[in-house]
Length: 129
Image (cartoon, rainbow, N blue to C red; front, side, top):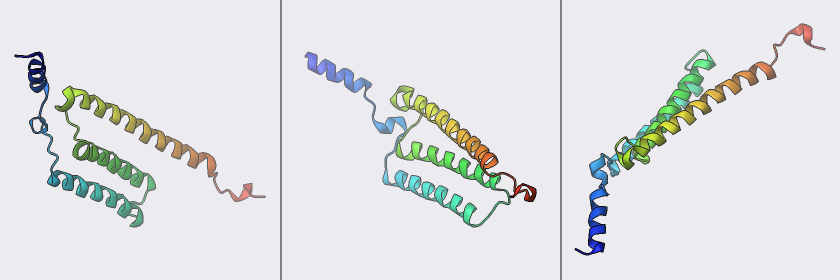
């Protein structure tokens, strides 16, 4: 066996087919992801336009939760991330993404809360000139 054949055989032993890893990049898989993404986009619009919740903070929490779910849908159906592929490195990328999303969402809520309190003083008639 030549050196090239040994190298190719070693490559073939370590190279996995996507189907072995549970990744199915099929039309049906992409359509499932697309339908989920569209539904997860329409629901927040309905929540805001229909004034579904009395408190805006409840609506914000629901919308941010749906946004987080949509990120996971995109990662699974379009980026094909799971625990088996790439020797677990995709799982590390998933954890890193979740940490970034939590920091971004909680930071956004914190900033919006403080902007609302600091930029919109109470409308007290005695304070008006």
